[in-house]
Image 1 (tube, rainbow, N blue to C red):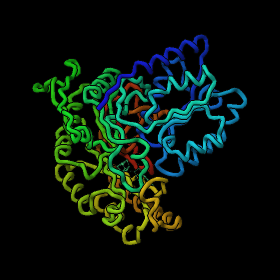
Image 2: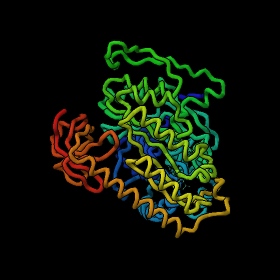
Image 3: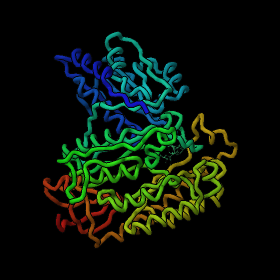
Image 4: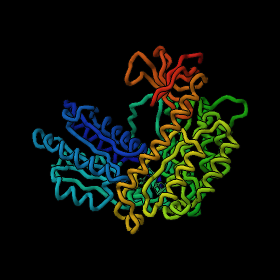
Length: 489
Ligand code: 5AD
Ligand code: SF4
């Protein structure tokens, strides 16, 4: 794997900074899609902050507007084109620079549409050229020309891009990028390229820096986190990385060693668990087919790894799972969930489900409802199947009528919501541990935090509790959150 330290790229940051002397330009960034995209936006923000820009939430006052796009479902496209219509006036009135990046820009039919119908867009960049954004921006400003910076070649892991995180308690850390799975409904492998993992020492260094800055929770990101280092291993590369944890940041349990071998996702979890200051470790998303026993063991034995697993189901029907190319059956999924529950009794699950995949019958859909009942997920992210140009499923003939897709979606939603209500009722009277994240969005007299299973808990407390893990007794349940009282920390 080629690891490249950004140096040349950062020179353009300096050049932009020089141009920005005595100016205080502002940027507005709109991020669509998943947490990986959010993390990419934090990198764009990091580069722009160093180049002398400051961030604004008010789109109308921005000198530079960036859309970081997603293309997993069709509604993201509608949203982008709607937004482009809105910002055209800023370009015309005051010459605001408009840049579009991210997954959607890896799709030729989209970039063609932008070139034809949205000629006012200045910069278009893709998922493999994110690190080149300062250069693109510099050339766009200096030479007043349109920039299209999209390549299909992946395989390089960039290190050293500055990251600007707004949240000061929880941080996302990308550990790998790309996907080799080619689920038949999914566009991601086409726009993000093949799997490539960061070196463990780079990840550990980033998490150590976060710990020093006072971060308490990290979420490890990747399209398929439990394939971490696997494709390198398959290519015959030596992946037995000897990593070192800073002595000052090493948990003192008496037997901790600062030098360890990381050669898999499980060993990465074990290593990160040793970093002092970090209280919680989460990860999204693992693939059920790659959920090996060593990962279960690592979750069980790592105090900081949340006993909560996001395990995307997609469908409960073995027939549909096969058509989706998911490589597990309904029974195998249920067996895996049971095995994990047996090993880690306090575990909770969340999942992703698609309804209305081509060929899905009422019986197939019933299988999905059945798995939802049996696993008793605490959170279900539900999606209506969306046809994506270039994917295998898009060419399947047995597409489901929109009306039926919506009916099934409503049915699933009702089942999930009523189960969630019952689960929330069960929390009342219980004691839970929460990480206090900050003030509640809707009531600044209240603080808010999350349980290990990701339930939002609001409570009355003083600001010094922000960033701490405390015990709360739940006193009432509401549709989207629980309410509680402090009992200690
Ligand atoms: N249509 C609907 N949902 C999709 N997802 C991915 N591709 C599609 C699609 N074409 C969902 C999957 C995935 C989540 C991130 O998005 O459930 O896990
Ligand atoms: Fe898409 Fe499947 Fe890869 Fe997830 S595992 S990103 S759903 S192809």
